[in-house]
Image (cartoon, rainbow, N blue to C red; front, side, top):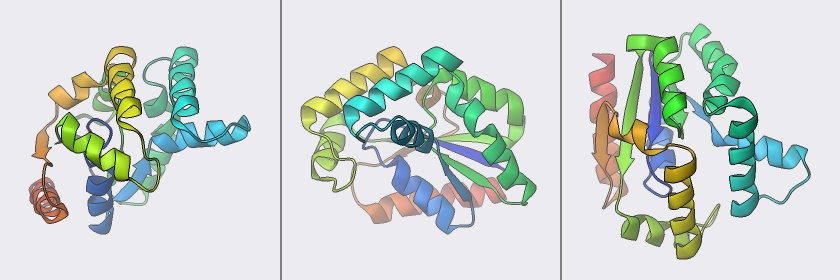
Length: 182
């Protein structure tokens, strides 16, 4: 069984890629669900400011691999059901190192890349979890500087350039799934 982590900056198309993996039989695990659950548990409003605060707080309290560690039982449970897993939104270098050490050759990383201009345009028109250009740029800076997001993108086993149409993303994801299952 394979564990595939989707990495990339906000608005690059990670969730779309993860959705396509799920449509091809992978169990989808969204690391950001941990943030959302913690925000709800604390009675906070779900917004960019609270999401950032909670992401950084969880990593400060539990280490930079917090999300990988917190999601490990969910990943292992899916693997025990004999299903491949796709992780939507692995972020930090430490998460990458932790999961690579745990799953070894059964762990692969897919980077989805889009330019800031393309990503910010997508994010400003997003119905759910939308951001202004300023919020998106601020989030980019915080994720690169505070949570070591660049490392997993640089070390990806596969990179998808996602500057155009959803059909193109789907073709690239399909190629990767076929390669992984070969």
